[in-house]
Image (cartoon, rainbow, N blue to C red; front, side, top):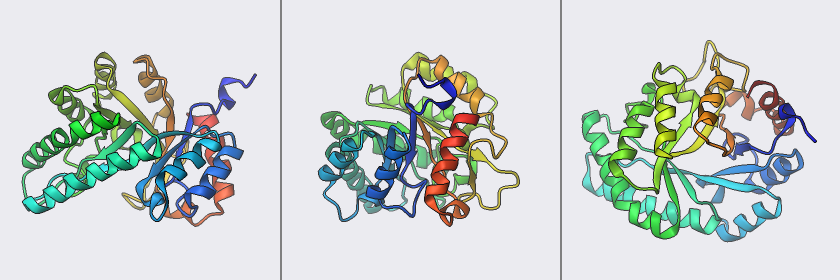
Length: 276
């Protein structure tokens, strides 16, 4: 029997993490390495029959943990808000075709309006697509992003804000995703993760590390153990809630995308075993 340190049964890797690989190549190598979960980014599905892709992933014995990403609801232009709604409906259809029951939402923001207005539009956007998600059997996970992204990427910047919105929407189909990269700095993180547990709305857990110094606020994430995030401690808080889902490695890195991806995958597996 594998010991806990080498157990990969809850390791999931996002397709964006090994961006140079297409989804077929990623699936082949993930499966061969003993990885059991994959989260698919929508760009990886372009030009493919989505149902066939889902079958291919399952043939490799990979659980399709989620589809990334929906969201980006706020706009000062009403037509663009409607376009975002339509795109999220398409994402729900894609998730159902792929065979996953979860979409992660990067909620968006518009710097030409207040954060409060963007948050209202996020709430209203999710409420609008929620009946479509429920009908398709697809849950929506609100992911808070680090405040440095509050200009254009997300007006939801703390786990408390994500919990507030999920509670306001009051649906079993809406919950939150916790990404250590975005939330590790928050002194209320343990309390808010516990709140997720009480609400049974913690849908996803993403891991990587914050390198110091970071050289790019988007594209310099580190392997687990390369930075200053207390990943094991945060994971213990997450698991205290009863969460028993996958630990999803999501790394955006110009450095690692330039590497041999087979070597990078070996580094991911090693870092996961030692530092997660």
